[in-house]
Length: 294
Image 1 (cartoon, rainbow, N blue to C red):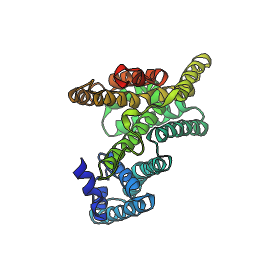
Image 2: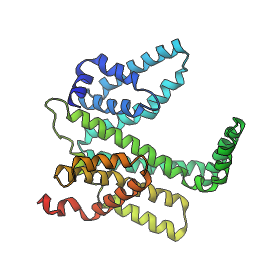
Image 3: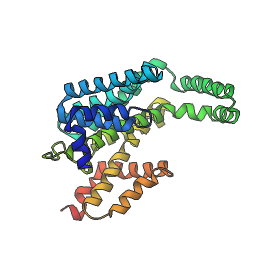
């Protein structure tokens, strides 16, 4: 990884070409991580110039092959802009933990704004899912459309928290990966902290607990959504503990690799297990209390 990170920043053209090559819905995660690397290494202004150059290159290629400019705009808005903002915040705060804590609060604020705009999120998603089912039915995917219609009520209640959790996870993971690449550069250290030391803290844990209790008492679906998202983010802290255990030689590298492998077929189970571990750690600081840490 050290050689890859060094090559990416060796020449401006290297980063621009890789940004353009990875700017797709399937590889956008990698392009966003590269944005983080460029911001931390060169600064936000230079990173913006390189992203603009990559966007221009994509636009020219799009004109040749017939790809609409909206694709370039979508990549910039969905992947590059959030990555640039989070990397800039990391450079300013000089703390990986604080940056991720702020990102959680921004995600919650975004949910509140969404709830304020649509009023009833469940009703909003029922309409959207109904429209999606009709589109699938018109395309001949009758079984898929019927399944979507049957589960419409349940999906509508979960869509907001699912989308927010997914987006936050993607952006947080790109920040961690980009910072990992930055740390591989010659002369760089853990100046912004280590991922394995990540701790969202008791304040966020307490807010999550209060949201859960109040949501149960008043039956507010929107508050349940917020509580779920604030619990789900602790899976990243749980993953940090796994890496900490590997660093302390408690877990072998094979075990860490298996956690990642099992995320594909057992994503829900693994994420919940890691979230529980991370949430407990937020209250009791398990790593500090562990005998091996002393």
